[in-house]
Length: 226
Picture 1 (tube, rainbow, N blue to C red):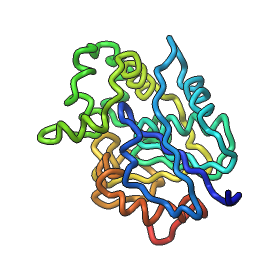
Picture 2 (cartoon, rainbow, N blue to C red):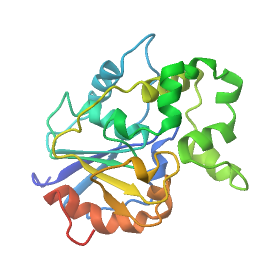
Picture 3 (cartoon, rainbow, N blue to C red):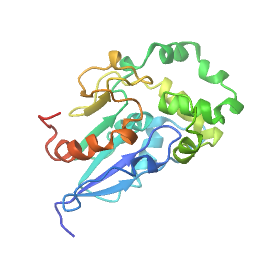
Picture 4 (tube, rainbow, N blue to C red):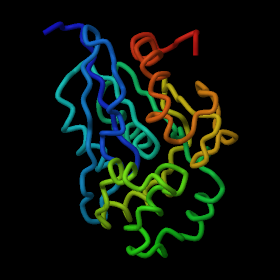
């Protein structure tokens, strides 16, 4: 195997399975793609310990980590435990300061404790939380991608996202964000690569942008055409 291959590990967003990355294609002579999957959290498990457990699934040395939404938060925590070639987040936040007001309010009031399991298991609720929009006519599509519905995981994930306490952005982090993201509104985001008209699910519907730009972003950390 070519020793110069970069192993790219993708972490999906909250409640989503890795098939959200099914359209992402990277040159095989330069990259090998790996999908990470959500684990069921242990009782009262910290986000840091959860991230450490996820790193056990990293089987290579020359690694780039890419996370979407809450997965972007998780890969930032993972990066504190292992060395990386590149750390990239998509449709996510770099610190608690970039969280929208509604999540900051939920943090203060601990409103996440009031969300009943029956609502959490509702596909429309999950679509709103994970993708920023209601299901409408795309129930089957969302069922395909939003398959992680264990109540223990969902309660934990919402709580950890709302209470994430990072203040300073990770060094050399690359942040890609859509101008029309309604889960993490663009107006709260600083120092990012902007994808015009990109929504919170742009990894699905703007995958051609990622296929074009990710190779150079991973290898060089910058792409002047972005």
